Image (cartoon, rainbow, N blue to C red; front, side):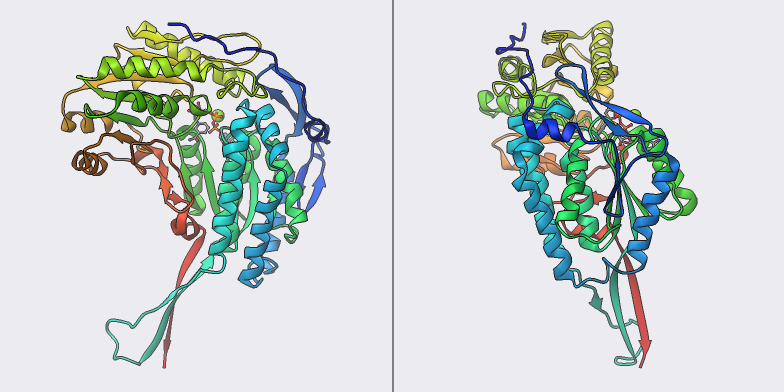
Length: 503
Ligand code: NAI
Ligand code: MG
């Protein structure tokens, strides 16, 4: 079954606001000032819908990373941020969110040009979610509290003992390219609420919206050094930042491979670390469902953001009695996800982010074919104009195949049958990962039984990828360490201090 392109495969012209953002000089945001890299080294910005170089960003050297960390260190140590009344911190974080909302259209277009995701989808999802994360976390700035506790072994009234929460210090935050602005705001928001100062490094493929965010940092009134944004390569700038002795905490989202490097490196100085890594999330379909609506949901679970999402529902498990109908339904809905240029409103899905990612995903499809999988949909690219990959469904797979075991991070679904819930729980957990999972059934008992059996940080019922700032988010096993979002996400930027005073 082929996937038909909806219409034009030509990327429309950029707006004047986008052209202006692309024309800025490559520079780094340190101490509320734009500084150019002394080495003059740059990284090309490529529009994945056209494969063309459209701008350049700075590739920070060690010296510049050190400067950014020094700025954040000074801003933390002299109390210009931590020492503010919490309400002042709250208001500034809200202001930053409002500036994002005011520039929503431009930011959505930049996201589309940089990452390849559809501009309309970014305007409806990425930009409001970015502002929403800041608004949610802003409220925590004024709600941080400790507790008063009576010591167990002392006579009542002999001691005054209490627990204080204090910001951990300078946070190095390294984020990936799949949701550039959501990832950036998701990292800075809890750190700011807790009273930390920040050096943020966006992904080298997608730094444009983080740089615009830096413009808003000044407008929102943040003191210099509180939020610094440095662009650069992972192996150099990212490595320098995450191992810097003046950094107290590293927060990383990206590949499990790099997460392990960061965790290992942090051991020497015992930096605090939170990691949000890969996934191979199961989508479990029970026989009692309305197949038509579940098929649409399962298609969205894997094809949204071209499958470049850590919680992508990449392993479909459908009960054997409905398997054929579910696969047929997902294949039909795959047509809704035919990829096209990111600024064309008729598409929901764009190209993959990069040449490297397209090659990686096509390599996985080839390996699936070699190992005996059959393609029931897609498997190819609709056009060489950009890094497009058609929505793809593989059947006749087994649990030992690479396509079933490894994170593909593209629009590729592997579908398997099951018979009973113990069997499917075992199969769903047969992975190194444990980030998300969805269960589709009308039977509440089955829903809750599977929700407790599946080892993952989030389990969704009759929906997928429902991620909300008020709920903790993170992974079991090799999907990560710690939880982000919710009050737990703020705690991850705090130390706990016991104060015990003899009276
Ligand atoms: P990556 O993990 O290399 O990149 C993510 C971020 O880490 C970027 O900002 C990068 O500059 C930085 N980085 C890279 N190497 C570093 C190092 N040694 N020290 C410090 N920072 C470093 O991910 P990549 O190579 O772009 O994608 C590879 C695969 O990773 C994808 O195919 C996908 O499977 C997975 N991935 C998972 C993501 C998630 O949300 N969990 C996001 C992006 C990628
Ligand atoms: Mg990498």
